[in-house]
Length: 396
Image 1 (tube, helix red, strand yellow):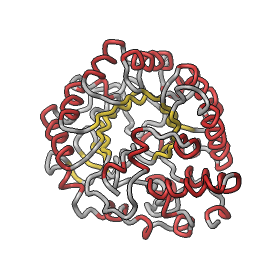
Image 2 (spheres, rainbow, N blue to C red):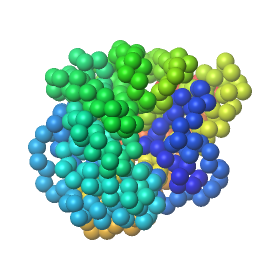
Image 3 (cartoon, rainbow, N blue to C red):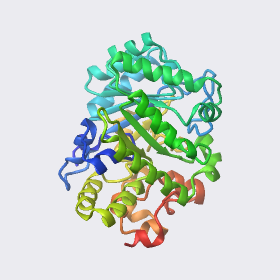
Image 4 (tube, one colour):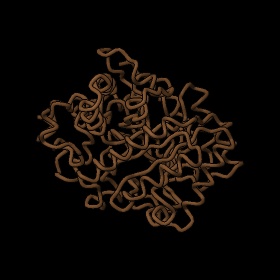
């Protein structure tokens, strides 16, 4: 595939595209590549955790961020050198994340620097700091998308994020982005604590006219590593997916219907395919074709991460494993090096074990998130513990 075909944040399954045939800009790029083309050297997306400081303290935070100053973060000059190297290397999207990226004062300047060099700068934020004026600054700096985390209704979200009033401030931030003409979306991470709120968040997205909703699966990293037993059961995950499919179909009939995606578990796509194979075999065949193009897990291939201190990781959840530091070597040199984990992630189909190794759909899924397998089994190549498919389904 070409680099352009792989524009995705991590492992995104575009439910709207697969179920309803509606093509967004990013998904049109991702799903129309010719199969068999050489894999690009550069990842399509780099997540840069531009600061670790955050004004909230979320239960599932993979960077374990708090409201404090962290030493050793990349300076403005070092950040510009990183961005210039990413652009020259062929990276397409630079995702500014954190911590809370809006606490970094030079964020607009760095976003503009990235956009001027051909990168597409986007932001992942808790949304609580986005005033009307700041939304306009973000827009004028060239950022093309703002993803705002909301993890349930007001009470649930505020408990999850460790601050009373966080829900209202985030919703104001979303509204301010929309007023400024910025594309904005909701990011919702599923756990047992907020599973019951999923329908209410769909209602919110519809009521507010929010153009995008991404439903994330929990990743066991950082503070999220303490929530392994709070992840959905297989039955709950399937029930959540059924609801997502139902609501996506319902919303598709409305003007300005939002894009609905699931993130961080490519087995979602297989589950959708298997459901359609029973009800609409012709559509199922097209879904299978698109999922094969999308290519499943992209950790260490289509996505990379640079943390606040310059360490490079296979994705944003591998903070405990550094491939090298951009202060010492350019990202492009690190990414094309001979690190053993990176090499393994680039041939996951040969490395994975257990149910993943025997799964008929391994070529679509690529074994899910290896960091989850490591967290549960102590083995990077063990089977994906969050797969929602039954033993019968993986061999069907």
